[in-house]
Image (tube, rainbow, N blue to C red; front, side, top):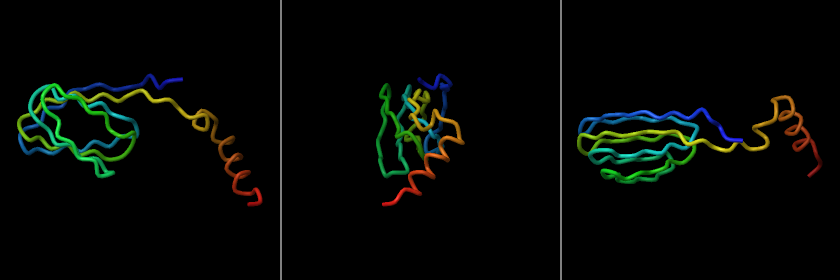
Length: 104
């Protein structure tokens, strides 16, 4: 099952302007115009040029710095939910209890 609630929007930045993106989903960043420097919380740095795309890791902070006036398209990527995420909270708690209570 895919999460169908994905978001797509445009973001314009002026040269040297910063934009902080907090997401718990993967985000596809497309640079429509200009150049941008992207830094992820895990230490990944990338320069994105006009008409290039980059897909972020699926959670955490992403900082975008405009190296020139830039037009970006940002779109969250539908992600598969794990079997544990599809279960209700009560079932998740019982499973965690069983795993932690089992003799090691």
